[in-house]
Every structure is written in structure tokens, then in C-alpha cells.
Image (cartoon, rainbow, N blue to C red):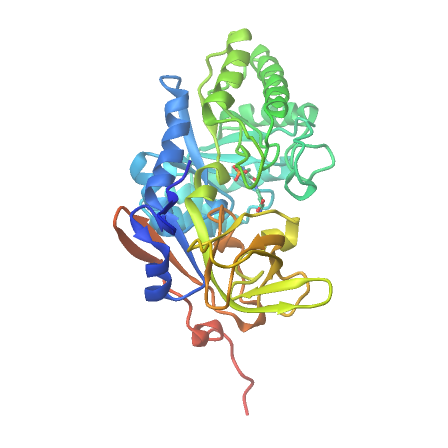
Length: 418
Ligand code: LLP
């Protein structure tokens, strides 16, 4: 459920009309709903109830400071994959102690910054990385908390680009190798073994891959504990899917009940962490775009809009379906079927194909479910400025990112000397 609903024939974000935002702020622009964001985070938090848990929102899904700020105020932790994301979390008022640092290629400076900030945990992905973190912690006379990311070899049944828990993926360590990593870690005075981590993929719409992965993690934790290595937390990663069209992903409640049953059946009361990104922010954001022109070729009709693949690359990159709806419903026009395409000079520049729409030039459209992996994956391709980002809160809205100026796009470039 989100807070982008029609009132009469006009689409609103909470109590603000999207037409008003487009008129005042221009298009394209991303619009987020604070109430939806909070609702989704609370849905996870309430699902866990009294069970000891930490929600670490995956910053990669959308790292805008206002979004991080809203979540930090709710008490969220964060999952980061770079020094850049750490800086954002800190700038937004997030707590580094509630932050986990994931990713396969952490640089020395990123580890230094994270240790200085008091990071909660490094989710490490290789033996080399354990040595790297230990050496830096030793130099700083600090103890670094770690979990090892296990690759459980589970098929997440999602798009191959966003599946991460198979042996053939670059992520994590297989349990046999990870066991040795834990042995070394537990003997290392600069390392504190915090937990065990895992993330099997994104946009999961079934529970069984999670259950399989958790089962394997519990087997692994049993082995560690038999070896005298204590595990303080099990981190399941993120990945819970959302509804883009007709998917029916489990709710946070269903997700947690399935995992809790498994924990109970194995007599485990270990505290848990999760790293949801998409499930919190995807449906809390839309991309607002204006129809520039309509064009009818022999085979295909095109609805040309002012947002392109540089603003929202998911349809082009993953052939992802995202719903496209009008800002004003108009019964007077008869619908036609269009490929909704942008201004970028690539045939892959589309936001949707074969969409039935009643539109004319100048109308406004909304691409739904664009809050996650939308603006963060944007680029300046074709010399295009990134759109403004707006957060609606009740009957008010705030500019949470200014539209880029064209000059800023080349401000850090230099011409050669004369
Ligand atoms: N934790 C780790 C270690 C991750 O790698 C990811 C996502 C997450 C958590 C959050 O997953 P989520 O809950 O958002 O599914 N650009 C792609 C998605 C890439 C996801 C990468 N990792 C897309 O637009 O579908």
C-alpha cells in the first residue's frame, strides 16, 4: 500500500497534487512520500516485534539524505557498500554503530573511515579482506567487528543480474572456506566475531530461497558454536521483492513468520539483522514525466516523454516492468498502445513497451515504484541534468535534491592549457 492515490481524476502524493508539483518544479522529477516510507519501515519493525532485531536499510537503493534522515529518525540502521555511502549516513544523522559495511572490494581508506566512525560491523567477503581489516585495526589499536558473508548456493529465482547467492556469483564465501576464516578471525586480537551474514539476491517473490539459505546458515552457526566460536547475530541480507505489476511478494509479516518458524524449530534465539532496500523505498517513490510528443510508425506508436533511461535505467537494463499511469484520468480520449520512450539516443531508451494510454502532448505521466534503484542509478548520459527530487509530507512538499544545472555537469572538467 502506498500514498500515491487518485482523488477524483487526479493523482496525489499524500495530500499534494502531482500536477501542482510538476507545474512548480518542472519535469522530470522524482517524488517520494514520507508516509509510505515510514509505513514500510514500520511494517518490518512491527513484524519482528520483541524478537531482538536490527533493520539496516540498504542505502544503495536510495541514498538521498532526506530518505536516510527519515529512516534514521525511526531508529533504522544502515547497510552500506562504500565510503561514499558511509559519509551520507553520517551526514543524514544515521548511527555508524548501527551500520554494516558490505561489499566485495573495500579500499583501505574506506576501512579506515569506517573504523574511525565506529562502524557496527564489516560483512567480509574474502580471507584477504579479513587480513586487510585486521592490519588496519591493529595500526589504529582498535578491534573491528566482523561477520563473514556466506554464499549458501541457493537459487533466489530472480533476474540473473540481481541474484547473488549462487556459487557462480562473486559474493560471499562458501561455508567450508568461511569456516577457516572464522577460525582465523577468532584467534585475531584485532578482530571481534560478531555474526554471520548472507544476501542471496534482490526482488525475491518467494519464501523458499530464504528458508533454504537460513537453514544452511543455522547449520553453519551450529558448526561454529561447536568449535567455541560465539555468534551474536544472524544477518539475512535484503532482497524482499515488491509488486511492480502482478507479482505477489510475501509481506514483511509473512517473511518473518517463515524465518521465525525455522529459528524456533532449531531452538535458535540468536538476534537477527536484515538489510531491506527495495521493499522500503520502491513504492515510496514515483518518476513524474511529461509527454512531449506522440508518433505513429507503421508497426509501433511512440509516446515520447521527457524522462529517459538516464533517469530510470531499470527497464532498459533488466527489461524491468514498471507501471505507467496518467496524472489526470481522461475518459474523453480513446486509448492507444504505445512504447513509452525517452529523449536519449538509444533504442534501449524506453520506460515501458506496449502500454495502453489515453494521452496527448503536454499530459503528465507517472512511472510507479521508482523510489528504489531509480535516481541512484541515474546518469548524465547525453548531457542530461539529473532531475529534482521532492519529498511530500502530508500537505507540504520539500525539494530534497535540486535539479542539476547544466554548468555543474562539467564544472569538475578541465580544458587543456593553450
Ligand atoms: N544487502 C546487500 C548485501 C545487497 O547487495 C543488496 C542489494 C541489499 C542488501 C538490498 O537488496 P534489496 O532489499 O533492495 O533487494 N539495481 C537492481 C538491484 C540491485 C541490488 C543489489 N544488492 C535493481 O534495480 O533491481
